[in-house]
Image (tube, rainbow over all chains, first blue to last red; front, side):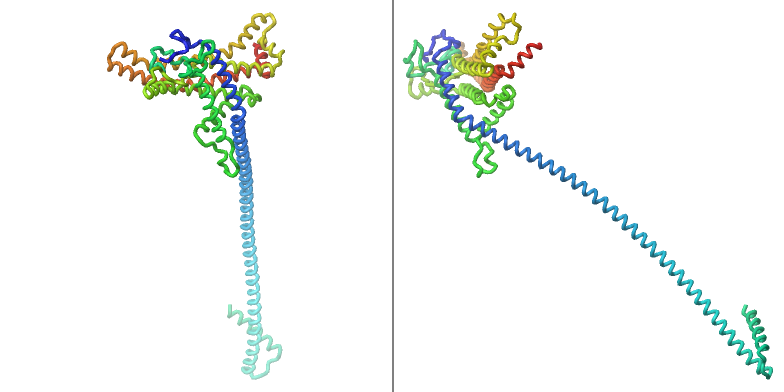
Amino acid sequence: MIPFIASESASPVDVQLLTLGTTIVVFVVFLLLAMKFVWPQILKGLDQRDEKLRGDLEAAEEARQQAKSALAEYEQELLSARTEAGEMIAKARNDAKAAAEELRENNTRELAELKKAAATDIESAKKAAISDLHAEASTLAVAIASKVLGRELSATDQQSLVDESLAELTRSSK
Amino acid sequence: MFTFIASNNPIHHILDKPISGVEHITLFGKPVFTTHMASLLLAAIVTFVVLKIAAKRIAIGHESEGTNRYLTNGRIPQIIEVVTLYLRDNVIQPVLGHETKKFLPFLLSIFYFILTCNILGMIPFADVQVVVGKVGFGQETDWAVFGGTATSNLAVTAGLAIVSFFVIQMHAFKSLGIGGWAHHLTGGAPLYLLPIMLPIEFMGMFIKPGALAIRLFANMVAGHTMLAVLTMFGMMAYEGTQNWLLTGSIEAISTIAAVCISFLELFVAFLQSFIFMFLTTVFIGQMSHHDEHEEHAEAATS
């Protein structure tokens, strides 16, 4: 058996002053050494790590905010560009429509003018032709009449004969 | 465990013993060198060395290491870092506020020191030495130079509580001044209650650290006594029955129970070191100038 400090009657609540003093000395020495060589290093490391984490978190938050505002700005620009493009397309469509309409009107007008000019030309040609025909017919009729009658017709006879012939020709042509 | 080897009294397991070979050196009839003193010294050395290694790992490295310099390598340093951070940010800081930095080294030191004492007490160093002495060297008596749970010694826990007491009172004098300290003794009570309040508050000054010492001591004694009793069941069964089969069965069951209780003891080792540190923090906080006013204002309103 180990020679115990106390015998069988020893109690765990007996306080040995020597042990108590040793405890205080050992702990105080340990505390002083730890305060000198351990805790400054550990606590400084923890503080630096805290600062690093806090700095990184703040930087990340700032970057997130910047990205968020950039995205909002981009979306805004995209929206305005889309609106502008829509307006441009609508304007171009309207312009094209107006141009086509104008072109169509011009064509119609020109066509009408051409048609009218052609009708006028035809009428003029018709009148000229009829006039030429009248002159030719009268000359021919005088020549024929002269030969039939054997004499020269006076200017008055000639004119009345022409007129009658023409009147008759006109009736027969209808 | 001494009892497992040689004793039939479970209390012997937690009693302090003189260091083998120097039993004859005494002072006032008491041995000068005991196993608990040796364990205490060992705990201080182990705590310092482990914390020093952890400090080197926790400290921020050189810039050439890149982002790796912010990493703590090693499991024990990582555990120490996490525990220290938790204690600082979630336990001490909320109680002490701006005075945290001043008391952090003391509070963390006392926590880790008690924790190491408690954990070293879980390892049966003394039993191993007794077995080695008897089997290896043919010692007739139990031979051990260190071992046992230092914190199961009331003198050890009282010594730690005395250190806490001085820290608390020195802070009180510094923070409150003599007048404030004396006023604090009244507990903010009306004048006609002073004859009651003064003795109560004065005794409270000593009872608070006294309770710290007794709580830690009692928990360690209870756990280790229970372990000793459990491991002794087999021997008791053999002495009673002389039946090896019955003895083996009882020993098997009691060993399983002892293993389970050991896990509980491991938890208690952490819990009690935390409680000692936490209550010391609370007592320091109560003596702070800021808290003193709040406490009195609370008392006046209630």
